[in-house]
Length: 401
Image 1 (cartoon, rainbow, N blue to C red):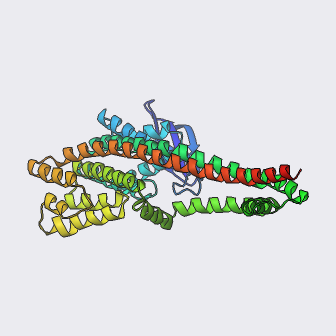
Image 2 (image 1 turned 30 degrees about the horizontal axis):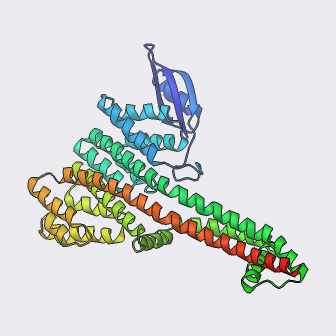
């Protein structure tokens, strides 16, 4: 287990550190061997980053922004990496982040590169993140890389918030409407249906169908509601599975309006990721290969791999390789070709990233404007059908009286 100790040296100075030991007696023996007098010895809690011991916790984009930003600030101020990580270990309260930082420090003490700890957890740290850290560490430019990472991750979080914010109203509208319909059909409609059945009136066929659905749901509510909950949970797990993500990717690339948003998002990820990788000093072919895995679009991923492997690797210029791929808009390929000759591809990619960020915002507004009327129409048709199925038999009942 790992212990944190505070001890007083022979000259009166206080020192502190961490030590792997079998027990506190071994820590005391270590301190005595150095001639230090123990002040405090504490056992550090062991957390499993993989999630078995910190169940329910995750490393969010915000956590990664703070981590990279604070490390960059401390390195700029002249603090060495070991001391910077020590400060963050004491400052961060989130167990999973504290565990990650302790593991980073342990790996650094063993002589392992800084990026290796992040590479162990692809669930939290993308290939792009790991390779940027690796490039910064190899080039001695880690401070600038961490600074750029905090900015790009911040923009990613902002874009994610925009997408969630745009879709939250339609989702709430759909869920609440669905619940209201279920309650109406399951509990209110059967009582009305029983009145007509007991009165001996034979309602129209569509009314009998609606009443039949309501009576069936009411009679089997204890089976149907748990089943619906199980389907909802199963659907959530399916969406987050590999097959579910592939299915969503397939649909988003083909459905109208959604297809446009998906394309704009992929282009924004492509431009921002490639700009960051090239700025960190990674070779163009390696940068394209990494970017291909980050764009989130199968067609664009395949195009980028062809550009790297069948274009640039075989002697084509970057502009020529991009012009062979119809997946990219002409404005992108032309600007890349021009900026390649001028020697400032990174700046053009950054400009394109900002442009597509605004395009995503506009596309999301169009998507919401498209979805809302469809949802309202669907809800109106459902409620109108139920209303008509009740009103027509009422007129029959009143006419009979």
